[in-house]
Length: 393
Image (cartoon, rainbow, N blue to C red; front, side, top):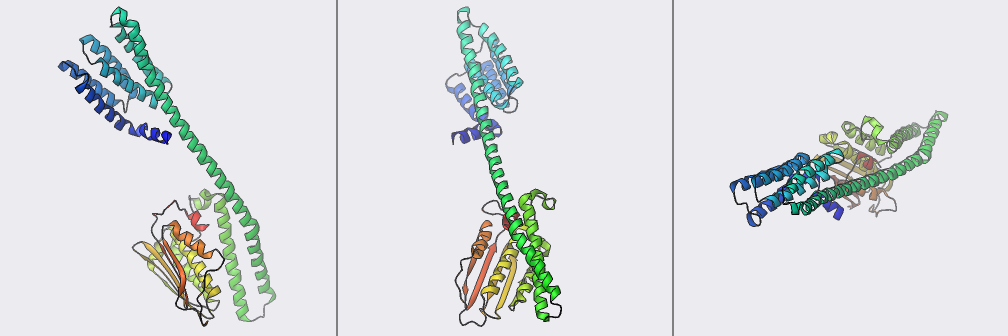
């Protein structure tokens, strides 16, 4: 907490505010503790204050100029030496805080030269004590500024190392997931697609309805295999997929057609599926477009698995005030009571998580004799960073 606090207070962006606050304290000192006696003293003190404020941008020049003003004050016999010395200390601190190497050495050398001249103007008996005090005035701000700068740099490097470690862990995890998807899921899907293709050729004279089912299975398996390959690619290296930092498994403009194709595949199982898709759905951003498609696929698949025989399903997707609203309702078919409770799968939990990524709303439950799924996805002001990669997972 202390490191974070010092990082904010001594940040380079806060230099102007920091020096403005010190200037207020300096004005209070000039008014209450070390009030100048003559107009020349006031001019020298206020000039030094202006130079100190300029140190927010040019700390090296400010440190040298303030040291010179201290010597100039000795020449005209002013009584504002104490405020000027405080300003020199502030300028040296800013120099050590924001500079390094030769810049700091050069500023310290110029300031030491003028401070030595200032000490020589003192009575002979006071020269050595004055030099001692001025060496402290010179050394302490430089040491403190360098310490704060090193503390900030160490904290920044620690954050970078932590971020690099987190990135490496995530990369290793994503690579492992990609490997399992390729070796396990993609292997089985490709095997199923191959076997369905063989079945289509060894049963040339079978019932056309069976041929239609086999063709649909072959097309669905091929599409799933293509999506799996793209997902494996983005897990391994998301930055190179599609020459963009993110990718989507669906083209936003093609989302309405993808929703209709999903409904058509479910319609082939015997369900009567009606679609109502608003024109603004085609203008969604890639993240929400992919999320809508996944919600629709899961919702219609659940209706196909759990709704009654020859159930009717209505799917509505529309955009109202930039909020996507998706609703899938089935009437339960011919079952006496088609209402059901959630099973042990992860489908509903996954859909709720997808909506949660956007800070949206998800509802699923009995609706009359059937079941209703409803989701709202607000714009990209999400509760946490949500990429298309997360939505695709």
